[in-house]
Amino acid sequence: MNIKAPIIMELVFIMIAVLVYITTSNTFFIFNFLYIGTAIAVGLFMMAKNNRYARNLVMLAVGGYLFFYVGILGHENLSLSGFWYYLSLGVFEGAVIHFLIAKIFGPLLFGRGWCGYACWTAMILDLLPYKTSQKERKNWG
Image 1 (cartoon, one colour):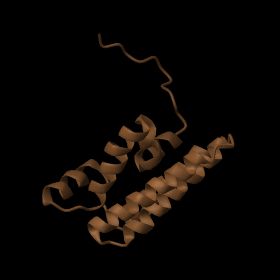
Image 2: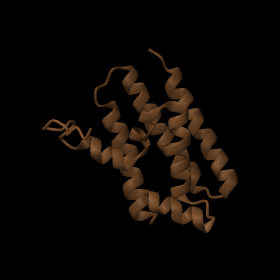
Image 3: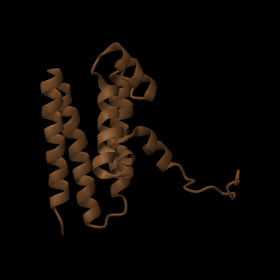
Image 4: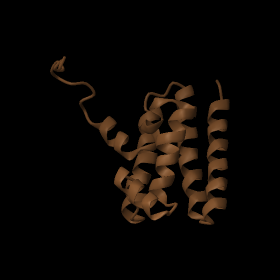
């Protein structure tokens, strides 16, 4: 079994936590990135053991955390509108950090599927019962 990938992922998130903490001086980001990194590392470990529910567990842990704790309880707007709002204010807040890590640098480093682990929208869409269209798609040309 390969344990290197979960350990590397945890170390990446520890480095992100320290970097964002140094940048913002906000201790919340230490907890935030340690929680997300640990959830993803556990999921990678479970995937290495061929657990079929590993990705669902990671999506529920990370997506649920981002939606309920950060979004609703923390009053952070992690959507695209929140990103542009905070960016235009010149404020380095949750949406800017989320988009930089989950939407830009994460996919550049780890591939297109990265948002499926770090995005509450992808979590909700992946948990819907319809994975493919019931009808054939229209060809517009």
